[in-house]
Image (cartoon, rainbow, N blue to C red):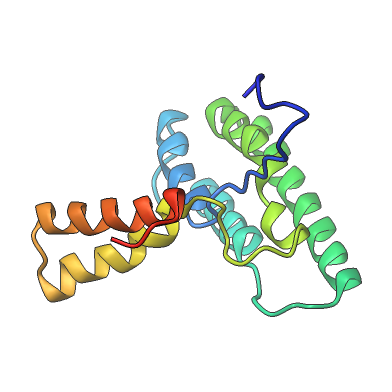
Length: 153
């Protein structure tokens, strides 16, 4: 990364689906009672914060929406600190700078990870169409080779 600094603009967008999903794990590390009042408070707020409406095209609306979501996230972090949930507060602090990159920069999707974009489709095929794990891995490799190397397989 240091070798690329100043030469390439790197945009990072945390996967908004994973934020509340992984928060369950860090809340467990903090010994929050699953489905307890505090657990529900944190998870429900994170689900709201990470919900981004598609097709919002007004720049001022986007700016206000992000400002509101950042304020709400700060409140959740303070709540976690007040409850002694240090793992959760740290996790959210680390995620905070990269939560809204995609909508700020008007990118498609809620993540900049090309792997994330492929996984939902592949997972559906494994679960619904009953692809084998090896077959799903092969399709994923081909798709990512196309994304990253630009060739058709």
